[in-house]
Structure formats: C-alpha cells, structure tokens
Length: 247
Length: 130
Image 1 (cartoon, each protein chain N blue to C red):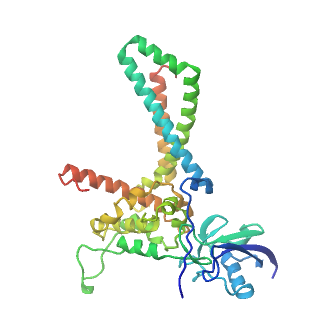
Image 2: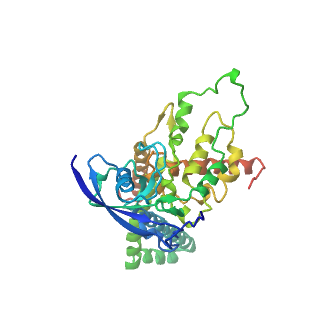
Image 3: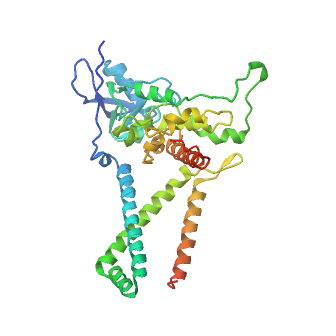
C-alpha cells in the first residue's frame, strides 16, 4: 500500500513530569484512506506508547475523539489525512483543562448536562401495559435534529463564551434541554427553566454561532439557544401580563 | 495517582484574534455601534426640526458637510455588514416548520432581502429619489 509521510504535531502533557504542554512531532507514513485518528493509532502502536487520547467507535457515533486539528475542533475519526498538507497539528479540545496529552477533563460538562434534566419528563407516568407515548412524524421532526448530539464537546471548544466564563451552561447542554422542551411528550420545561433561562444559561450566549459551524452532527446548538431565548422571553412577557412577573 | 490538570486560559482582551470567525463576529458586533450612531443622528435631526427652520438648516448643513458625508459612507458600509450578518443568522433563530418539513433557510433569508428591497424602494420613492 502506498503511503505518504505526514508530520503529526501533537500537544503533549504528562502531568507527572511536565509543568506545561509542549508540541511533539511524529513522522507517520499515512495511507490514502486514513483519518487523523488512524495516524494517532499508528503513533500509539508503532512510535510512542505513552501518547494518550480518547476514542472508541471510529465512525463518528460515540463522540469520544473530539480534538482541535489545525485550529478547528472536530472528530479525528471524521477528518481524512489526505485533506491536509504535510503537517497536521493536533491539540486537545480548547476551553477544557488538559488531563493528559489529548485527554481533557470533562467533569464540568457532565455536571452541566445533568443540570438541564436531559430526559423525558412526561405529564404522567404510564405503565408498560398502557403502551407507548404516541407522537406524529411532524412532532418528531420538531426536535429530531437536536437528538443527534453525541456530546463530543467540539461546540464547547469553539465557544469563546464558555472559554471566557465556564459558568456558562454551554451549547450542547442547552441544545439538549431544547430537544426535550420541544418534544410533544415532555412537560419538563418549567423544571428546566431555572437552569436554562438563568443568566448562566441561554442569556450568557452572545450568538457567536461557532458551535453550529463546528458541530460534526449538524445539531445547530446556536439555533436551539436562540429559539429558547425566544420562548423564554415570551414566557417572561406573558408572566408579567398575567400578573406573575416571575424573575 | 495524583491528578494535575493543566488549564489554558483564554485572553480576555485578544481572544477574538485567534480565529477568523471570531474576527467576523467582532466586526458585526461593532457594526451595531454605527447603526446606533445613525439612529442618534436621526433623532437629533428630529429635535432640530422641532426647533425651527434655522436649527433644521444647521442640521442639514452638518449632514452634507465633508465629515457628515464620510460618516454616512462609514455608517452605510457597517449597516450592510450588520444587515448581512443578521439576515444570515435568521434561519437558526427562526425555524419554521410546515408539517413534516422545515422551511429552507435560503427561503427565509431571501424573504428578508425581498422585504428590505421593497421597503428601501418605498422610502426612496417617498424621498423623491427613485
């Protein structure tokens, strides 16, 4: 099989011996059909066993291999080496602390994700005997796009708002909140409101829109957030008119 | 093993220089300033009109002066940047569903440009230019 030598520059950080990250170069004989993840696997298997990174499915379903490649957050399993020149720079996702090499600390996102209650909150629990919660194809269409999120965190790496203030709930978690709010079987909007409609929620977003541009699954979190802002503003106004004046 | 995560800080003053799309974002954010300045100039004009013919002529004189013209050209350029940036963003914020289909973003953006053209033409006719 014909190969092409590509220099892969990887941002390394080994906490037990490094005080700060540094770039290490590897020359990798890449095959035509390789994605960037294949090049990393080659390094791990053949050149340097100490390199750490996350991956699992190799088919952009699991969301584990998000990295910054030549300055863009993307899935390393989705980007072909042949689409780059002779040098590829690979860094861990920006805006997250680096655990080791390309592995980031995800704890903050995990907490935020659970804070928006990303699960169906039905009006009333149904027994298995009483059957499914029914939904029309049109009702499914309303939120289906937002179900595609695989929590790869590329959107957080692209979001300067999250980079500047990590109290921001962030794109993926807010898009998932919108996914459930927009689901006809769900009545959990008010239960999610305290987090979603707070200052650290949708109102922290200044609509840079980078999250939607980098999303490998075309979820468009920026759109989800703007739509939530709209419904939240309507909620606020109707609350004032009806005398509630909440928040 | 002890964990020692490394934190890379984003510069609060120069983060937008790190990527072209952040520069574009800052450009369309700044463009809103020029739109606000224009609104301010128009409001001042309205007040001058209320103060009588002399004040009104003075305001017209400022608008037609070299500084006024340069300012208008700048405002026009930034207004176009502002308009294009936000028209482009509309389909994300305004998602329209018809049955099982989502109305294509191009159609929504196109409708916005259509309305802009119609309103502009109306204003130009009203002003006796077109």
